[in-house]
Amino acid sequence: MAAGLTSVQLRVVATLGFCGLVSAADNWFVSPALPAIAQTLSVAPVAATIILTAYMLPYGTLQPVCGSIADRIGRLRLLRIIVAGLCAGTFLCAVVPSLPLLVIARIVTGCFAAGIIAVSQAFVSDVVALEQRGGAVGILMGITFTGQGLSAGLGGILTDVVGWRAAFATFGVLAALAWVGLLGLREPSHRAAADDGSTRADAASSVSHSEPARPAAASDASRAGNPIAVFLRSAVRIFLGTRRTVYLLACSTGLLFLGVYGLMGTFLNQVCGLSSTQAGLVMMFYGVCCLLGGSVSGKLGARRGIVGVIRIGELSGVLAVCALMVSTATGSWVPALVAAACLGFGYISVQPSLVTLSMDADPLQVGLCTGLIGFGVFAGGGVGSALGGAVLTAGGYLALWAVAALGLLLQFFASIRLKG
Image (tube, rainbow, N blue to C red; front, top):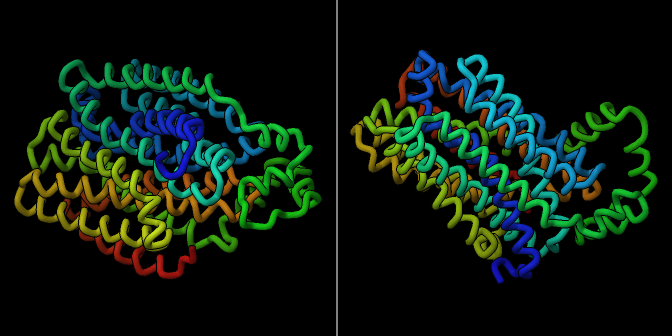
């Protein structure tokens, strides 16, 4: 079995991966469709990039909130709620008549989608032993971000053939199918017991077999009092605790990897002269390499260690932006194809590895731990899209890619501080 998983575990990972695939696809098919959306709504393509930020900021910011809620009410219960909300929000995006209303609809959709990846990652930690967890998370994220890449191609084709509104409706249907898939899963028995408060120490032990659990009294105390204050204290304690380097690297990963990817669709249209379909097909290589990278991350981690995988991914990101510089200088889309592939492999090497490292920050609040990674990555991605647009306006694409390359090199050297 892949990554040493049983057939039941693989089914869980695949189902959760499809939910993540839909949530990622729902955002990233917009990238090659931005020129068409801008034309329909009578705005400049650069101005339309606010659509990406409108989705990613709540998508990232609310991930730790969703993770914390899932720790309390159950992962599967929350997943069913938020996937249903993603479905409704995506259909809403298909019918709004103006950019401001589309931005609002994307914010609403991002709020519901926020917890899907983080809660799914925590769910995996419930059903997969520590030894296989890195590989399982790699498969989960490989499936998820294959959706990110493949949606670019599908979204571009749909945009050219039937329009971007029909593309939104299509991804709404996929969200509905993901919700149906969740109906076939069950909450792990030890999670149900932990949610009832009867065997919380056992649940902590099952989540992290190598890390000592905090005393049950401390856990009970952490859940007492004002829930908002408790959540904020826990989030700050975890984020700034022993794994703070992991969380800061998550922020820079979103800022740089997702910030670059979000602007590739507009770049391919404006500089390389590609249509939405052509740009989407180029960007699909991101998803293909996400899937390939996710499938080999477990074996690569066994040889190089988790930190080694992260550093390989960061170097792959540097290669991606260098290829984009060549594409900008020549006007050819071929180097951009290499860039999409390197960016996908780099991202899938870094992000799941950071998730795995975060899980022992607090074994009793794994949902919050992984949610904070999502917060860093996707809030960083939202900021990256906005800052990227500003750099683009001020200095053009060569300046944008140069800034991204410098940032990735700085992240590479910063990752030296990580301990696996």
